[in-house]
Length: 571
Image (cartoon, rainbow, N blue to C red; front, top):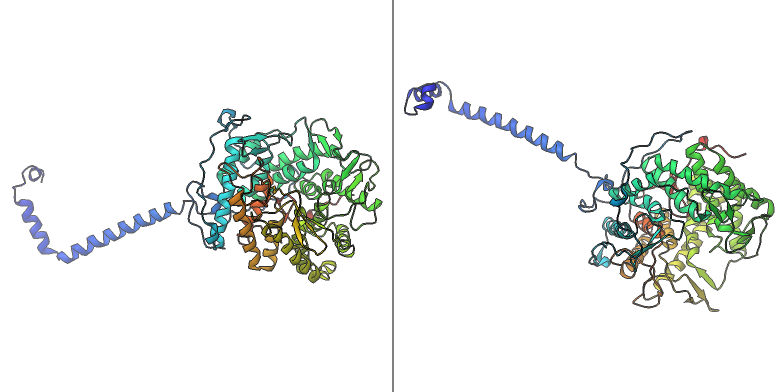
């Protein structure tokens, strides 16, 4: 046989093959080969499919640079998985230990540094987009655009200045935009961006020797950290939230127990603000969700006790119902007689209802406070010649309460359901008209009414990227499923894209009555934290952050409803 390999002319192998073929049917040989080839091809296909199954398909795992095709609304893979973290009595190990952040590796953020701004995007014709999945994708792109501009120019600072391409640290230099954006990035499935924000937070020291706003730090920083924990299950965020909570607690060490306006996060020294010795109702009355939840996830009751004691102070010094906007920080008594559901009062009433819901009705005393306030709004008329955009959260609050009362058979809420639903629909229509009445399609800070009840734009014609109307549209849609609320929200988003988008981020508007809508050098962190988050959820399936499992803070940070059996009520 070896000789045959070197001398092809030798005929012996040929003769042997002829004898073999004569002995066996050629058809049998062909069949055998076909079977072998079939099994080989099948094995290869199995391996190929197995490898393909390892590619990311969930929205939360798709890189922004190479987005996957949008899934059908409600399909598996549209929303990132939200783990259900357990309540612990002491710290547990961090989910993962990130590499230290190298300062030189961060984007340039020196004042005045123009940075490498993202390329200007071509504006698509959003008016032709009707599919909710495609609308959600458009909002997701807007979130990515705002974040990428902030990251490029102002990373690590409080907020970006989009026109001068600089930054501001007006809130104490606590990286507000990073913390405030965490939940939105996660819900949008922008996991690369979420992880870079997470890594920055893990090395950031929040206990700075600077006076900060107790209210703003509580709702943006403390709330943002707690929500990031609820969405990701990463206990590092709880550890950071505890640092912030410890820094804010000394603000409650006043004669009355009402927290001071500002506090130094290191020394604990506290002070009042522009109102002298008075503190603002919407500020000291809008810490209860965040502080109670911090106690819930840490097992430390100090935070909850301090925040809930505020209600004891109020109830012992007022007759309930609608409350004045200012209280004396020393005596705890009302310091003026102004009643409103707008600025300086708004979120106090919102938190009465939401604390009742988040605690699974454990804080039963806050429900009568909420009912008396809403009844007072109706009985006192609360009709004035002015409507603030800040008050446009009210429709969502009313509908949320009506829905919760129906689902949980709460008599006080159930008996008022129709009245509250009807009022919410009318108020929503008024809030939407604040947008449609202007050439820009954007609202002024407030509108005024003449004697014939005709609305006109006020002297303050700015649009500061506020979220209150889209918040109510989101809740109205979730509860009623009326498609008009999605359509109204989409028109608002189109107006934001047309007038507020810049080549690096988004900008507030100076005058909404001008068709060209001149921009301002300002982008508040609540654009990503609230406005874009509610728009994203408006076009997402209701299984993403269901309202019977989560409560949104006033900064739109979703916190999981606490189990009644695990709530240790303060004495």
